[in-house]
Amino acid sequence: MVVAALLILVVPPVSGYVSLPAYAFSHWTAYFTVMIDAVALIFPLLITLITQPRLLDEWSNSYALATRQRVEPARYFGARVAASAILAAVVFLVLTIVCFAVARWTYSYPSPEGPPGVLVETRYQFSQLWAVSPALYLVVYCLWVALVSGTVAAVCTLITAVVGNKFVALAAPFVLWSLTDFGLAVLDLAALSLPPFRFHIKQQPIWTEFAGWALILIVLGALYLYVHRRDYQTAGIVRT
Image (cartoon, rainbow, N blue to C red):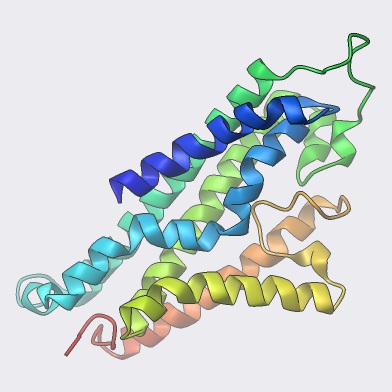
């Protein structure tokens, strides 16, 4: 888990920096999107890799069953969900900050005339805030990535608790995420695709950013209700 977290933090900014000479970015924020694109492609899978292996080991060895004798199940499980959410939020918050910093301070335009004028506020999610203050945009976006990452990590933990097969548990969040985005694209609703990395769609009002997050929260609530009604003895927690 530590190795996975370090790779997530190091590979995107380094790979972006290495590929910089191959591009003629019109603005440093476009350089940032290239760093994050690979992360966005497998976002839920990366979250499972840094949050779920320890739980899979813990639950496979019946640690949860022994813990139930000493700690209230709701408290134990709630702590595991919270720990996953906090870990993912911190890792992806740091990643976003690092990528913004590297993009800002290493950006260069290959032509001596310099890059053309670009209206950043018309390009990306939340970038309308750029017109108010570039710093406000950066802060809001970094916090948004952390919030969504924490929410997705909580969902991944709940899926792991529900699914008995460990390989299915690790793959399910990524598969469901991909199918959801594909389905929205087929329905011509790509503007409502899942956050937080939505760089390749036409700029939309800020409220559309919250539509996908609301769907994630609904799934989160439904899964938690299911686990709670089963008295925290679902197939993923109580393994045979």
